[in-house]
Amino acid sequence: MSTPLIVRPITRADYDQWLPLWEGYNAFYKRTGPTALAPEITQMTWARFHDGYEPMHALVAESDGKLVGLVHYLFHRNTIMLGPVCYLQDLFTDESQRGKGVGKALIEAVYAQAKRAGSPRVYWHTHHTNQTAMRLYDHVAEHSGFVVYRKDI
Image (tube, one colour):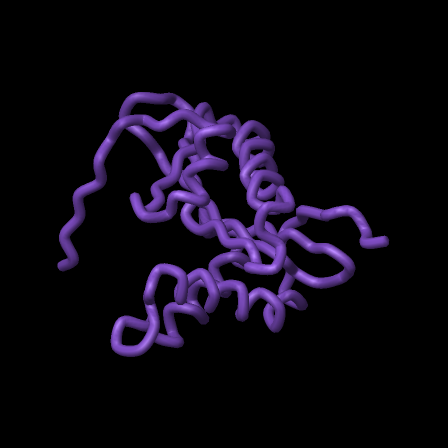
């Protein structure tokens, strides 16, 4: 019988298990080959999770001593709310664990962290092709109707 899923803050000792999940997340969004993230971006991202002055945070889902999911989130100011809003930036579940509640548990853990921080809202983006994840998102949040535009500079 497997142990229950544990969602907890990431620790420095998690790096070797976090990295394959992070690479899986980036591969899912086709950030591989010529469009791969530079190693220094991964190293800086990892360092930010452990810097108390950074607004960036990470939680991991653990089952049977193995990391099976990650979520990264950050807090930022907003022009229409007093409290900081929480942006859920990255969410990834190991392929073998999908459909077992890992993603939902990670999202709910971010909700709890946001509430603790006095944040009135958690939001995130996903690609329109990510239909599987959107089925979960439709159950745990509401679609805002906004469309995202961006320009790399």
